[in-house]
Amino acid sequence: MSMKELRQTNALKFIWNGCLHDFCYLVSSKEEVGVSDSFSIDPVDLNSFFDEDGKIYGYQGLKITIWISSISFHAFADITFQSTSDRGKGITDLKSALQRIFAETLVENKDDFLQTFSTEKDFTRSAVSSGEILQHKVSNGHVTHCNNNLKAAASDLEVVRMVVGNMEAGHLYSRLIPLVLLLVDGSNPIDVTDPRWELYILIRKKMDQQGDIQHRLLGFTAIYRFYHYPDSTRMRLSQILILPLYQRKGYGSFLTEVLSNVAVAENVHDFTVEEPLDSFQHVRTCVDIQHLLAFEPIQHAINSAVSHLKQGKLSKKILAPRFVPPASTVEEVRKVLKINKKQFLQCWEILIYLRLDPVDKYMEDYTTIISNRVREDILGKDSGSTDKRIMDVPSSYDPEMSFVMFKSQNVETSGVQMDENQPSQEEQLKQLVDERIKEIKLIAQKVSPLPV
Image 1 (cartoon, rainbow, N blue to C red):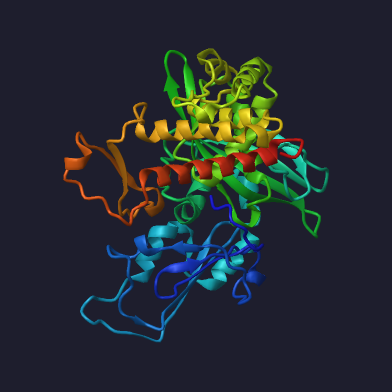
Image 2: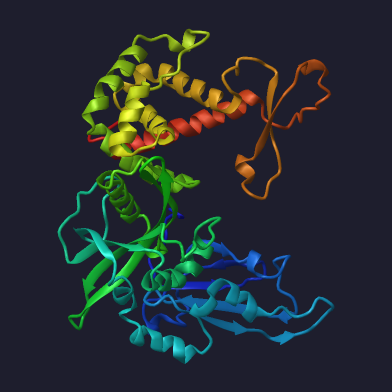
């Protein structure tokens, strides 16, 4: 889920510009289709959908413009080119490539696509009619980040749960698959025949100019229920997408809050997230911190940790301690709030930071705690030894987060040649610590009732 600032629009348009990095927009009416003054979102990389090498062959002056309806989620591709020529590598079958993305949602005729705005104007309402309404709120077009202070206005929010495996849920998700492929990094479609999958659909109901109630799909998340011995389940969030038009308005926080409430109400073992992006991890942590701040059973443990930290001079100690919560506290949080241990340890650092007063007085020792934790996570508990090294390695997955760590029995004679241009281990660790401190401060500013 991209959390960058997006300009408001209702159309999703892709224009091939020669390198298959395409600009996206959403259309909510037939009048918006073909309008040149559309608002650009992030480039979408379509390379993987065009043959093995991700290239288009045989076209001169090619332009591909794809419009996606935010009403029915049908798509139309407007393809123009000056000429075609087979120069030994064939002519790319554009239709087949686009079918791999859009499948049955791709409409071949433009007039037919324009008709869908009227013939399928009630698609979302019909698709979710068999679902279970979990939460109903009133908003003014946005939801405040990290809390539920919703102001009264004319727009109604609903979260509807649909168990995958029935026809309605499968049909709705099949319309959303292209958006999943294009906008959710690294995602693959879920198995719509497996009833352990659940869809949580975020809907906004609003009256149109004719007085009819329109249902707009703002986003959704896919949850998988794992069995947990002996008689429980674990909820794992696998996909979450807020449509680009509605991002950065708090809807992701609202949907995450609903999921957290479901986990508690249904007494699952815990609620986890599959490989969360940094942007969603930020939202998730804001929601969890709000719950933890109001959770009385852990307040003594937080105060005890803060009191220990305030004794000072941790940065001067050779082996400064890590500030981790007691095992009983970790278990109590999992049992009641359904926050798993890994996530709670991330929140714990923020909870301590929020209790530092004045912050500046204790920041050096606090940074030492974070540094020790990062060092141990990366290098292990024996990280004080000097025979471990970190080296960046090329990677197409994530160049900024790809590295290898190796341990040499004899650093001077290991035979490993260190790249002098590579940042030192300490420099890399410091960078990670700085990034973590920055994230902690940002979350603290959002969840704290007072300036931090």
